[in-house]
Amino acid sequence: MKVQILCTLGPSSLREDVIRGLDGRGVDMFRVNLSHTPLEAVASTIELVRACSDVPICLDTEGAQVRSRTMAPDVTLEAGQEIRLTATDDVVGTARLLVLQPEATLAALQPGSRLSVDFDGALLRVVTVDPAGATAVVVEGGRVRSNKAVTVDPPPTLPPLTDKDVQAIAVGRSLGVRHFALSFASRAEDVAMVRGLLEPGATVISKIESRTGIRNMDSIISASDAVLIDRGDLSREIPLEHIPFYQKVVVRQANRWNRPAYVATNLLESMVTNRRPTVAEANDIANTLLDGVHGLVLAAETAVGVDPVGTVDMVLRVVAAFERWSMSSLLDEDRPSLAAVAAGP
Image (cartoon, rainbow, N blue to C red):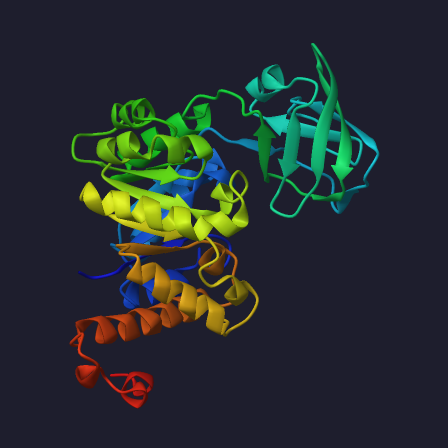
């Protein structure tokens, strides 16, 4: 089985030379993340890729997630301060005002609700609610940036697709896109809703990235064409030290259902800013492959990283080493020597 490589496109890779370079490395799919792609740019992004490559495109929906809207630059919240929470979309957020989307988030807030902003951002606790929004106190300070994920506990009930998702799917269909990823899949009914918007034979990749998704993984996997475990967003709801074990569970269940399984987030995170990864990252990829995954998803590494093509080259090297090792006999004497593995093909 060929290990598939999915590359997320972004500012670093939405260039003809980079797209052609990634195509030349044999990547299997280009991912367009709707959370970071304006609706008006969806068609032009697809057309740019199509002008350079025949590699399939996957539109990855925003899904049922809460995010911050536009924030002023360099906003840092201090522990103990109060901050207003609203959903007014024409206001820029500040250290005293956090604008959330979608608007339905506000209705779910109650005194005691906790909000975690971004992966290493601030932790807020709601103090009071009113018809126009809510007031929270900063429990742990941190930086708050535009368009970043916000985890709300207890979580709000949100539709599986945003209005933007529905419109983007229609654009994708009109331009021949056949692969769609459902972010924050919560139940099989979510998958069915997405499939109802697609042409027969289109592929739905359901992303497991929440407690609810873990709880309902079997029904989600059964209803999907493939599954993707997003370790980053999942770690916002599940303790970090448990993520490796949840990864193994999701991949094992996907294999039992005979569905392809993909893993995303932090595979080669250091290569966002450096041209070489850490040994731990290479080890992570190897162990992920040993779990039985069908594909690896590069996110920030190829979307905003310093060397998208070099990142793919590094993944290919680890995959090649894995394939050479796994194809050898299980007997120690038939294992390739370390020198042979290091020497490459």
